Image (cartoon, rainbow, N blue to C red; front, side, top):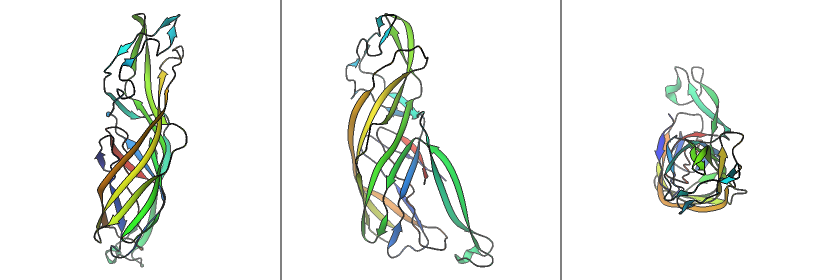
Length: 261
């Protein structure tokens, strides 16, 4: 089951689900990438970027006439997955057969691997290590593509409207953040995160003849949270393997479901 989790800007909220057959002792965490689906209807607030709204001419000229201003405060915009989705591969290894109640491979219990590719709008990369009390991991946002669910309407001289989609993506190389895990018991722990994000907002007309519009580049946030929890849950398997299953990144008020690579 792929859960859906609520998030609130500007914090990064993380829920980590580990899977392991042996809960006691050091726990290996594999490096990899976590992919996320943004639930359509997630809200993006453009007002911190444009507190006075869109000035006259922001959306270029049509027939020599500049676009009309759109006064602030601007409406909160529902967004969803953008136009640039990327594949992540989900690999699940499990035991199957009538003899698997023993939790080990035998003539009536064998290991099976299921591979599934999903296309996601957000990807976070992380390092690995062994959790034995505490473990610092590096994290980095490596892909982001969101788009407004409905375009905004812009007029030129009170007429001749054009429709523009708002697209949110990463802006250049991303800085490395940190995810610090602290094991509290054999089955639970807490984590602290710091994640720098550099992003941009673009405006794309829905018709080929719409004016080209300059985007808003060089936007930066440092997303932080402390004391979020993770849980270790048993999953039958031939080895004590831990999978990071839910690194939930929040740039705005978002609700996302997750997949994993």
